[in-house]
Length: 135
Image 1 (cartoon, rainbow, N blue to C red):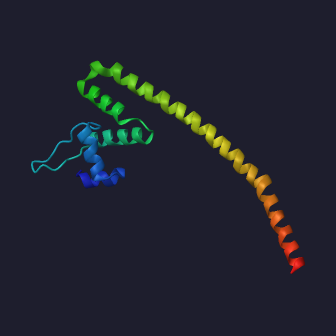
Image 2 (spheres, rainbow, N blue to C red; image 1 turned 90 degrees about the vertical axis):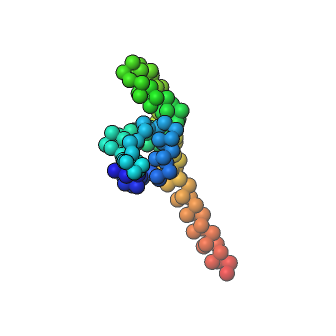
Image 3 (cartoon, one colour; image 1 turned 180 degrees about the horizontal axis):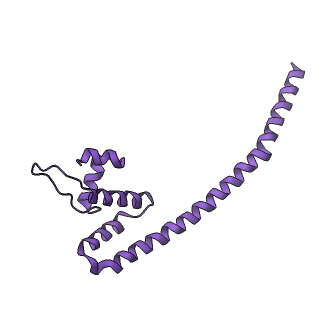
């Protein structure tokens, strides 16, 4: 696939894909004899992984380190696993924090629906009735 097709497939810009390759977020993409990037399913797997990790807030530096280690081979498996474990723990903590925030929002919204909005409507009705009497 060419860069335009891959960009469309992953909802990324072509510049983002070039950046991923330039900084080492994905292994170098093979090119055609004319110099055009020729993305394979293997390349697309890396792009999917990197996009997923970036969406979760994994830092570029950690991902670049992971890719470099991957390219060095099986001897780096433990180091790669440690990066994944560290990011797993960070994302799990982030989910816990987000769940707490979501729970608080739900309580606040419920309070508005049960207590605040009905009282405000009553006050508006009372005000409108009072205003109508004085007109």
